[in-house]
Amino acid sequence: MNHKTKLHPLSHKSFTGSVELIPPPPKFIEFIDAHRLWGFPIEQLAHFVLDENPEHSGKRTLPPHQLMLVYPDAVVILRGWRLELLVGPLVAGRIARVHAEKHLGTLIIEEAWVSEIHVIPFDNPNLLESRPEIPITTRKKK
Image 1 (cartoon, rainbow, N blue to C red):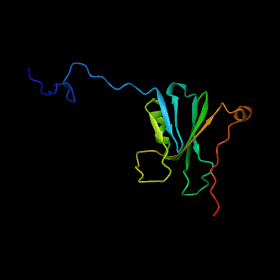
Image 2 (cartoon, helix red, strand yellow):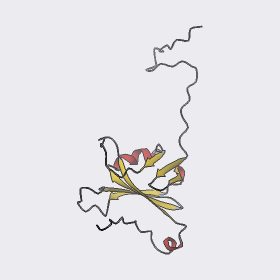
Image 3 (tube, rainbow, N blue to C red):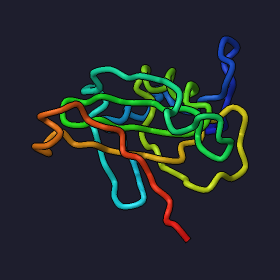
Image 4 (tube, helix red, strand yellow):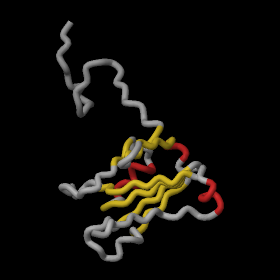
């Protein structure tokens, strides 16, 4: 029996078996910040908001965009560049992992760049009494 890969006349790609399996879709989105790994079920995303970063205010070195993801147990805030490119894959359930890379590297035009991840759990009693506030990073004075 010949096991060479043959291209079927109606197919645009080669195939060697009779059944081709695709990888299972991820169940969780992992958010990796400077301190830990957070995981939230993809199906539990209640809603999201893409907006301007309130700290940006025209400062070229700060990320201009903010994407807020609301889950039943927490709010995840992503800050970075071109975060609108995450919306399609987010809605389709195709994002498995988001890693914050603080220092801007080589920007690829077709990709989003996440520089900050803030996770605000709702199990904090202070957060249950008022609206969650977006953490503000402060710089040390020299």
